[in-house]
Image (cartoon, rainbow, N blue to C red; front, side, top):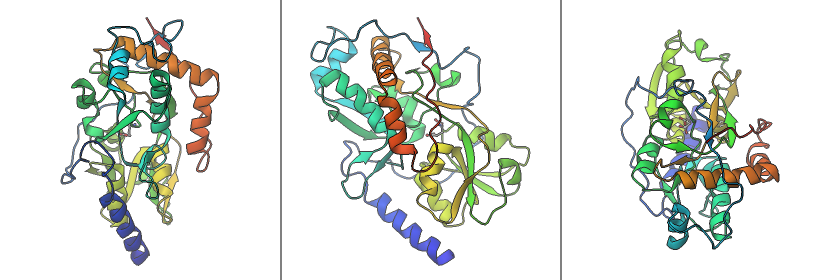
Length: 315
Ligand code: GLU
């Protein structure tokens, strides 16, 4: 098993090392793993319903006719939508080693926005950013939006805006196929990996079993740690774990979901008209079935996609 794990691990390192050439910005350097006990909480309700997003206009502007002075007009003039995302989250945004393109659920959602601005879903520029930089890079304008398995919560919404929810995930654990554990509470004394800056950390550090936390910059690096036996388990959204388990025949995803992780596109608070526009695009995609088709395309191979949540709005 260790030899097979090592082979898988080498394959993983090759994939990770071969990435980055197509992104417009260098992929992040791996930083040393550091223990962390601070994490945004997923269930903070201090702002009310964090998933209620700005109501879209009654009608969306037509392609080629973005309102003067709007952020959509800025994007249109630039000729591409700049999207911050991951490059190694299989099923959501990962490099296809055969085509070199980054693809997945998050990328297809971002393409819907490009289609609405340009009439062309391919007019996107992907910028690979670590999860821990998502908020910073939205705030400083490095990207127009983040599409990166990003959970909406009050703490984050105090810093950036979010679109309406385009998928509802929930946290689980990934363990070796030989393990009898079904929850974090069965992992006392074990090392559990999660990505720095993710909501996943919160449940790990608050488990009464006190598992040891290992943080890595990306979920791909958590998988490498698991395969090298530096981590006994990984805990994050079931969606992400499904993509990790698909790459490792010695891993399984177990147990019920124990958090709610509503995914939204992260957008700067400086462009409320863009958030409203994005919500209009998502409303159309919900209504005509496109969003459901995207969820099926990426998730149905490994699980039954969760029902798409209804949009909730605030004015
Ligand atoms: N959805 C969670 C979050 O946004 C965990 C996964 C991730 O970080 O991408 O923190």
